[in-house]
Length: 436
Image (tube, rainbow, N blue to C red; front, side, top):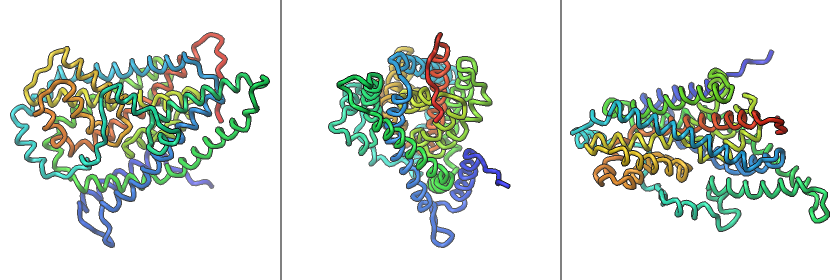
């Protein structure tokens, strides 16, 4: 009799619970056989790094394989952008409504200096020395996406560059396939077979690594909780609560309703079938690391491979609703707390910069926290707001960072569902639905 296998989401949740317990009990000290929570965190990070490293070539071959199997039209790209724009607009609307209705930052008015002093000695997982040279300038970012060699994007884990190259070579491969048999075009079937095999091999290896993610999560959570403790939550509960509320409304109310009403997937299907991917994104703090699980969950929902890969792989940096919503709400919260009232036009500028941050620089670790000072500065807020941002909220950002990743995973799945439903509504639809 075959033993019943626990779902990945449940195993990850158990890993989180055990890690939190070890963090509270062990703290930063060594315990059993000289092991420390920091050591467990380092072991866990090795697994997450491996996931992220393999996810980049997975994106490349997933997009190439999608072009080989299905004819992807420019119309699909326009639909992808339209769906992502609607989703992120709803996210920004939720954030603005919450911040202007509740005005949660007022609770911190005249307390910033005291709270900053209280958290000054608190450890946080954020390392300011690791901040890369990022920018919100679109032209600067565009230039960084154009590689100097074909190997550079893969070696540097530059997601957008890999997507651009995959789209370019995928379109060329599809064109050659469509004109196969003409005198000036050679036999590309061996190349097609290589692309398909490479994708399947990568997917299999990643599926093996995903099986040990719960153990990695246990170590990572133990390390973070051991460093920060739980006492700091009392002081930062207001900030943590309102941001979590915004992220929850967008991901657990709007997303399921949109998947049901526009995509034909009831909430219990969307959330239950996608639980493994969401828990992987939450625990790994990366929607990129969760990508192989996300593709598997979408296949279980009955979404075509082409729609899933367009949304999750090609559209990965367009689906960062979690980062965009966080940036906008955090900026407005800190402005309220420091007494800087922002008019509607200024709030629109904040949202614009938050949107650019979500699209352009969300592939780096701890992107939401790293880019927040740039969003604040670009929005015209005084230096005092910028200076107060990171040291004040960093102790609890590790929780919000994981929530942002979970929202991004749900956004990936929603876009795939809506894109698939949209394309299936076309009259005389001849799209091939691959299930290999």
